[in-house]
Image 1 (spheres, one colour):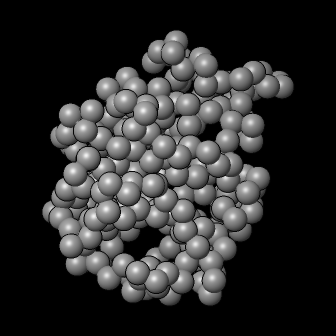
Image 2: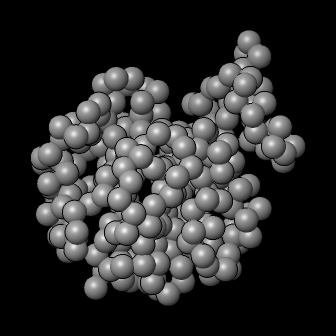
Image 3: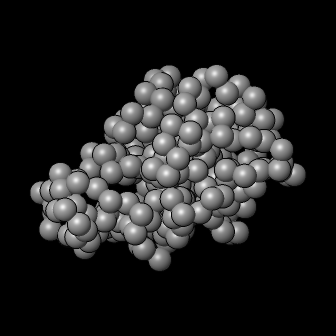
Length: 240
């Protein structure tokens, strides 16, 4: 499949019918800065991705609210959600991010895929666990790819964020490095991996988690560019 986009994604060569990509900020002939702000108005961007994938049904773009609602596609019709999964071919699960983590899931035989939009609020609300409960696979049978998010060195948060996680478990203390003025540098990648491991996922089956959206200009970053930031689309689907 020829792509007009610049993308990254997991190396899951043994499940070739699963396709997972993150569309980068800089693509050949598409201005993905227009993913910013009112996404409903960016019909050109959405149309370009639809034409690239040619899904069975139109892509169900979520209205992400940093919550923990999970949709099964194409059955669930809700709009506000932060995760989705499917076992139907050519049905696309998609999230948009610009510092938060896009986390992609597949079972080993490629018959079921899912995706999560995970900022600190979603992680604190258990969005990964909510997805895996509905995904309904034994943990040993799940592959995970954590796409581009903000790195710890670039992500300073207030003490309320550290407290929210350490109230849940002391295990999260390793994900927070003290910074100036009683603030912390938070490691979203590490928080996600702690949760995945606690849910029984073998970390040898977890890949990605190696970018910094704040410093890499090929990636969108809301913290770097504020209201001018675009959004990266991360998508996963099962080919026929």
